[in-house]
Image 1 (cartoon, helix red, strand yellow):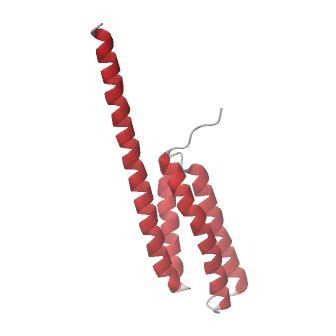
Image 2 (cartoon, rainbow, N blue to C red; image 1 turned 30 degrees about the vertical axis):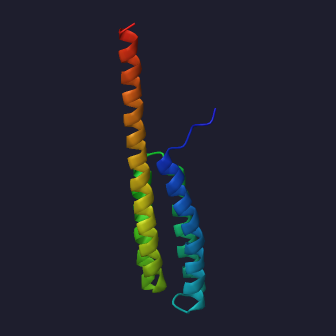
Image 3 (tube, rainbow, N blue to C red; image 1 turned 60 degrees about the horizontal axis):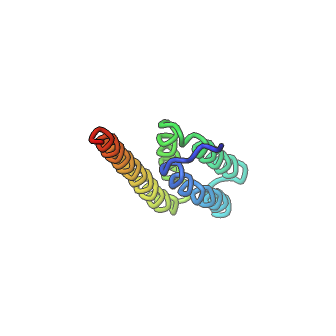
Length: 128
């Protein structure tokens, strides 16, 4: 049976999937605008895409979320070569923060509800 993904894994991987497309377009823009030569633009873009893909695979572990924060920081840093990536990076770091924080909050709420349910069920069994 396949392991069920956590809400953090689900929403964070969606953010990263959209970000991979933007990273690729950012690499193309860096080359097209003449900010960076073709080879370095594609190597940097491909490296960041691979890092984002690895991050998706590691989201089940706490360091995967931290790796995601690093990807967000690198996207902002890419604004050095393509200035619009500063704005794009800020948008994606905001999406990342909202997704991760909201998903973690949902996981805590669900765990609390399950705990209360289990306490209720075990409490009613003692009264019988």
